[in-house]
Length: 298
Image: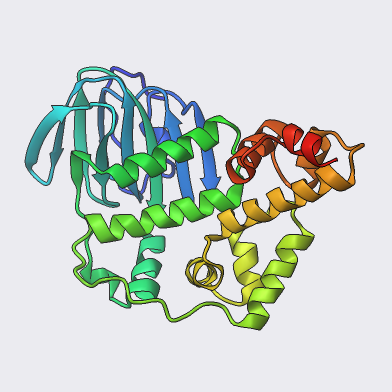
């Protein structure tokens, strides 16, 4: 690991993002094929070309930063909420007057290529991701902030939410920060009645187990990206929200039918990370806590 104050130089195909940092990220989460890192200290000096498209959101620490990319020098302040977007394979050099905390989101170039081919029906070789430097993007800020909270809390909502949020963010990057001018085609329809029933039956039978977007898509016989759009069109909710609703309904039934079960036992049985996570979601959907609901209905 290179010292924080020295200059780092990475090859174009650096094996991991963490090689770029002066010290290891505070926390990280893998959400195939994406990566998310909570960076405690950004480097003072670095020169690199990332193997993946990289989005950085500054969360604290205001410092002047200079970036040279393609012979162009820009500089500004790393105010909390500002975003830097660096396309894969594009070499850049950064110099900062101090370290900041940040959230880093990495999307493999291969994923972007498939996204453009399958969702936009365009040749990815003709589309470029546009570099951004200390810009504002409320969508990126909101989604990465929420994902960072998930990682810090031990991912209580589960991988299904992370996969949906990461996929949404990747599509937003194409819409808002690429050279593409072609709008996303209209959805071709929801899931068939048979496929939807298979998926819903599986969800209901496995509420207490981890549920992944890829597993549900495989059951439906479609890609994960198509599944998410088609499922939303069929039921009016994204998959992670539908699963949460089903888990709350299952918890509600157990609160009444099994008064001997503790709130923690019920949370575990229906797939919540903890009793506090169940209480938060339950209160949001039912208007009261699980304890209050049980007292009023048993």
